[in-house]
Structures are given as C-alpha cells and as structure tokens.
Image (cartoon, rainbow, N blue to C red):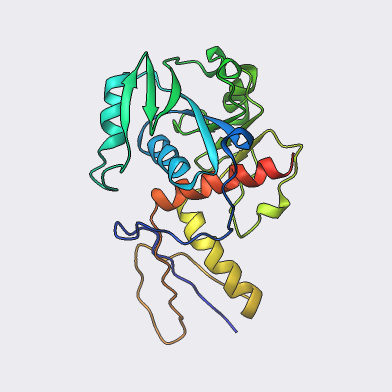
Length: 242
C-alpha cells in the first residue's frame, strides 16, 4: 500500500486550534517563569497564548527595536488574530497585561540580558536570529535554565507535541519547537502511520496534479496562533520533567 499525504498548513480562520496534549493550568506561583526574546509576531502570539492558557508565567520581554509604547499597541491590536480581550498598558517602565507587570529589556546581545534578575527560567527565542546552539546558548549565560527556539533548528533536537515530545529528556538545555509546517503535518502523519503505515508521502501544500493512486489528506492549521500554543505546551512538558 502506498499512501501519499498532503497538508495545507495555514488558515486565517482557524482561531481556536485543537490541543494535542492537554496541560492543566497551575497556580501562578508554581508556573514556569518565561521570558520572550523578540516581540515580533511570534513573540506576541506566544505571550498571548500564555495569558489565554494560564499555563506559564511571562515575566520578561526583550526586543531592542520596539519601544514600550509600541509594544502596548501591537499586543492589543492584531489585524490578523484580532484584538486582545484584556487590559494592556505601560506603567513604570514595564508592560502590564491583565494587571501582571512584565519587565522590559532592550538588549541586542542575548548574553547581556540578565534574565535571572527578572526571575525568569525559560527563554522563548523568537527573533529568528539566534537559531544555532552557539547563538541560542548565549541566553544560558544570562541566567536562563532552558531555551526553546520557535523555528526549525539545524543542530538541536526538535520536538512536536503529540508526536515525539516524550523523547525529550531533562539533560537538554536547548530545544526547538520545529516549524509551523511540521506542527501541521507531523501529527497527521503520525496518526496515519500508526494506524495504516505510510510507505511513501509528501507535503503538497503548493498543489500537485493528482491521479487515482493518490489519497489527499487536508490538515488545516493556524500557522501562527496554533504554533504559539504548541510552544507553550512544550515548555509545560519540559518543566514537568524537572
């Protein structure tokens, strides 16, 4: 049997992605303390996912290119994912979301960020720049315990929740949440392979001519907001192994 799969990996209409692994919210004083490096689209969505889920505690954000007032505006208003339904303001040099104060840094070098001073343990590296073991490792020098890269990674292990997250072990300091496309395709491929065995497959998101030897499977996935929720879930899973 030959099974070929196709995954269409983004839909602006899928605003409520299904969770592959359920992680119950914890009291704030027992949550993983998280800092976000890079407050672009992915950094903001990871922060939004954290507040929506109540699973992790965002305590610090670093972005050398965005001032605090603009952080407030961009977090509150998102033309793709809609307005944040909560309170957002700048107060005493901090970003305050739903009454929670978040320390703000504007450092270009990750090694210069004193993450530990903000009480942060995990770093979400969402700049798209520090995506090697050496570069991402600079966060560890600033006091981080672990780093999660929100992008594919050439020289570090990649994990997809619901697919291979159980292979994570506590000795790893740096890990990748893989790519948006992988988070769309891999769960579908795992279900099909576990039940039927995939002998051959490809991702035809760009489209391809089909004949009667093909089986097309369509997987809708919000590339950004769905992915940011998986980043949060991976952090919770990693913390559970400590």
